[in-house]
Length: 414
Image: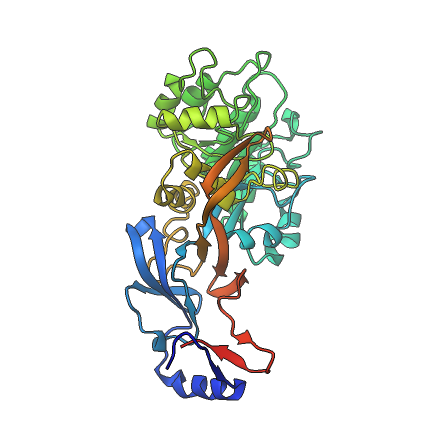
């Protein structure tokens, strides 16, 4: 048969052929011929990924197409575990975005809401957003009982470690840690309350703090004296949230390396104000990448800065990070940070079947930082397909569907 000309097979014939082969089919979905990047298993090569039900069944070379009920040709594309966004906003904040509208189209199968709810409001969050989302939604609960509301964020009387820890104990399936943010008072009240709740619940704390001269706080004290190993500081590349780069020397502060050595983690948290080219480029040039790549995605950051996960990864590629390293910091590292590895962040056999497929086209692409400053790059990471819990939930180019023709028949290219 001339492979340049498609054979036309009627819909009835296609269904008959499918039915006749069912008895020999082991898998429900097979992603075939893609370049698999799975840092958890040190895979960086062309492989096939087979899924049965909601679980990864096998990752290997040349799995027979006849062994699966559905086959998707992933040749020329990259296949990774579903991405994990460690810092998103899907509840309790005015700019919150419903996760299914923004995450699944970006290959992000898990989002962690960063402080939208507190112990007073979490039950509503669980009922109205978490229970209704196809995206897996996990939670950094706010140390402020009312959550991310500006009228309470600087109120120490609404910071109750014992009640926060109790709410975590009741909801360990989804609450993975504690968030403190936007405290406008002087001193360490908010951070100490969050860390105390972290000790009571045995969970990590993620900090969004503003280091101003009148705050009575410094980055050095925060990172070396207040935070514990395993705690995180987000907004790494924002010079108002953390003093990563010495403004006089242009060098990464020595205590930053010291903090990393003692186990404090640094999260990107791009957002609408927290990814700046001058900071990020100097940090990367001096060997200080973020431990985790995250978006701080909300109504403003999704627009001009375009801080979804694929764009964040693209920006790190532009700054010299390798693609496998970027995937590591978008899958394994965040899963470990919230104590969900190897449940999440891997394509290991029997792991949950959260999988993303990406294109990496070459060209001239514009990427903006949070100051709306543009840099040009030659590669852009783009999600084309997402599998969540074994189900195909996003397919930009229709890779998983037959082609309909004007003659009313399906067009099959052998």
